[in-house]
Length: 164
Image (cartoon, rainbow, N blue to C red; front, side):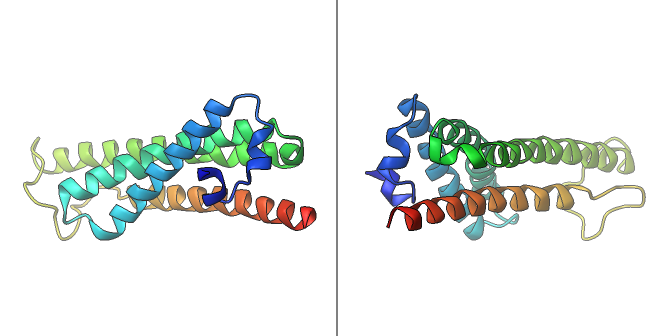
């Protein structure tokens, strides 16, 4: 039922060795989508809403992409794209780790620039010596998430056309 909604036909997922993995992956994908939709409403000026959106979207998508990539890779029609999907899925969680590292670095640098204290409010501009690499890591997250969805959807569309 939910498989059709998400563009994966029942025939695609019926051949899975581990249907439970696929179901969990689809639920993580739904949760990640809800988080991404929330992020469009709650920007960084809404601390709590943006934090929850980030947890759902950025935390949920890599899990979904890995579970779905592994599950789909067991289906014969998806064998040819398995390595590509797994590579992009791994890029998604690596980019999340990179974001955490860049945010940690920026927080430490802000603390050093503030004499051991973090500012109470976000500064309008960063102090000298503070690297703002988190924006690039965030862009990598968005790119990897979109790329995985694009590749999976493209392949699903091609399979549907072949069956028609």
